[in-house]
Structure formats: structure tokens, C-alpha cells
Image (tube, rainbow, N blue to C red; front, top):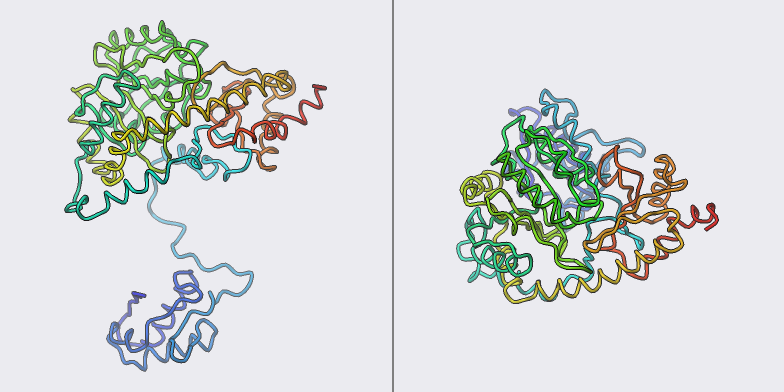
Length: 486
């Protein structure tokens, strides 16, 4: 262990060493079972006599902090904290430093409860793919290959815009799968969708500019824009998607999820899409299109992207691999008009320079070798079966409690609750009791972080097995159905 100790002057050196080590043990920096440096080695490092260190070790041993093992060395024995007492804090809680007031208002959004409970057998959390079905055996060799010296090269910094091979692969993939017209130079690789939104905001928005978002909508998008000093305004949605006529005329940007509105689930109609693009041209505003899980569509014709309809260069198209692969990979992308390309590249460089190059290179090969398309086809069948099972179950015994919002895509379904569960208090009691009993589910208000959201539940089916769906629903809604006499 490379143990760092500082000594003050030349007085009571043995006592100083003893107190520094005791504090490190109290604070948990030195854990039970860890070996302290040999007295001779530590004495040389501190430029003191060996006996000075030895006296400190003997004092620690006498008080039960460490123990000496013949032929092995000196080891931490315990934390030295008497039972029932807490260790002193490693850092003062009070400080003269304070964050901007803005962050105190935003911090609850990213608190521990924002990420939900740990996975359970009945995991209805929205936005999670099934990590158990990820093709690890195909992915692992691609990553290993990029970590070889021959592939890593100098191991230096990469292009802020992204790995050239991945940008080319993404341009081809998006053109084929979503009819997004993009050249490699139009694509910028990001660390997930959240960074893409952050970069767009940095490039387009001045403090005080207005951004319109869907209400209910995706909370992290609002968080990104609000953190940059923008005025965020919620705009209602109906069965056709965003209500364009309700957009504030001074909005500098509009954030939408047109393929699968989050969290309600309906697609934006073609009529609304063309109206939104006309509005953007008329007001000189940007449209940020988040195409977050459109790969999984289970019926009807493919939904056109706003980007494919845009002829005036007002749409910034955003996506990620969090839903089709794994959220933990943290790889996303955006496709932007040429006028924004240089500024976005600079913003990316300013933020974190570049997304990890080995991951990008492995993903480029994953796409080019057809492994991504194969994985999407496989998961589309899996999720379609779960979507059908969930729809059938909710439309059966529980139809009197939940009215589903029609949706044929993505990884979640939303239903408005009725009867006794239309009361917000009863709904909060239901979800709290369900999570305590192992059913991970959230209300519409919790998912959208909106007090104005109608009473409802959001059912994710990405990380729950098909055979676990109905038992989970019975555990969740069974008591309410029984009281209702269903």
C-alpha cells in the first residue's frame, strides 16, 4: 500500500504517525485486514528513525487497532470505533462553498429514488431493455479486439465528433432503418441521449430562452434545459401528439418524442408533424426529435421521422443505444444541420472531449457486421410477445381499473386508472405497497415528474419476462379488482 502521511515539524513524530494512522482507520481508509507498510519502509519514506515508526505501531497494537503477525507484518485489526459510535466525518459537512440556487431545485430529480428499486421478478419499470438477452458473447470479442495494442495505437485522444467508422456506420444504419438522410459528417457521437440534449442546449440557447417540451413528458430533457438557464414550458399532448397550436410563439426550441410519445405512448400524426415543421420555419426555432425506442414497432406502418420530412434544416435528430443494447454502454448520437456541426463538435470537446474510443470502434463493427440488426430483430419478437401479453391482461380482468393508451411500439404501455384508483392518494398507496412487495411499478405522475399528470400507471415490459407479467399484475392490481368485484 502506498500510504501517504504528512508530518508537521520534528516534535512528537511518533505521536503524529500514531494519530494519522488512527484517523485513517477510523475513517475507513484503512480497512480490517489491510497490511501496513513495514516500519523500515515507512521510516525511509518519512525520513524518520525506524524506532519512531515502531513506537507508533506498538501504540496502535496496544489499543487494538492493529496486530503484528510474525513473519507477515502489521495488519489493521478493526476500525477501532466502539460499538454504537459513528466514525468521525472524513470531510466537514459545512463549507463556505455553495452551489447555485438552481441546483438545489433540480437535485431531487437525480436523487437515489429517481433510478427506482433494484430489479425484481415483477419489474415494470419503464425504459429498461432486457440485459439478460444482450449478445454478450458477440460483443465481448469486439471490445477485446479494440483493447489490443495493434488496435489501440497510441491510445491517445479521439475526435470529439466521434469514431469515423461509427459515424459512417450510424449514417448507413439510420438511413436504412429510419429513412434519416445523413452523411457521416452530420453525425456526432455522444455519451447517451442526455449529453446530446445538453450539447444542443449549449449551442442553441441563451440563458432565458424558452424551450417547449411535451406535458407530460421526459423529465431529464427538462432538467438539461433548465440547468442551462432556459425557461421550460410544458405544452399539452392529445391523441395526435404535441398540440402545435399551444406552442408559445417565443420558443427557441421544441423537444418532442414523436415516434412513441413519452410517457403516454401514442405516435405524432403526420398532420401534426407537418404543422410542427411549418411552425419551426415560421418562428426560426429548432425541433429536437428524440427517437428513443422506435426500433421496436409491433404493428402498422413505420412511422416517419420529423428529420425525414424536414426540408429546411430545423430538426436535430437524437438517439442512443440504451434501449436496443444496454443503458450502461452510454453511447448516443445526434444528427444536426451543417450550420451547427462545428459548434456541436466544439461543445463536445469542451464537455468531455470524446466518448470512449474502444467502445465506439467495437460498436462500429457490431453495426457493420449486421449484429445490431440481428439483435434488434430478435428483441422485437421478444418485446412484441410481452406487449401482447400485457395488453391482453390489462384489457381483461383489470379493464375496469385501467384504460390503456393505445400504443404499438417501444418498451412500455401507459394506462389511466379509474374507479377507486383514480384518486391520487389511493394510487400512491397502491404503488408504494406494490414496490414494498416486490412489484417495481410507478405512477404516470412519478414517471413524468408532473403533478398535473392524470392518474395512471406506466408499465414497462423490457426487463420483465413474459411469464412474470400476469403474476405481477395480479399482485399489483388483484386486491383492487377483488374489492371492485371483478
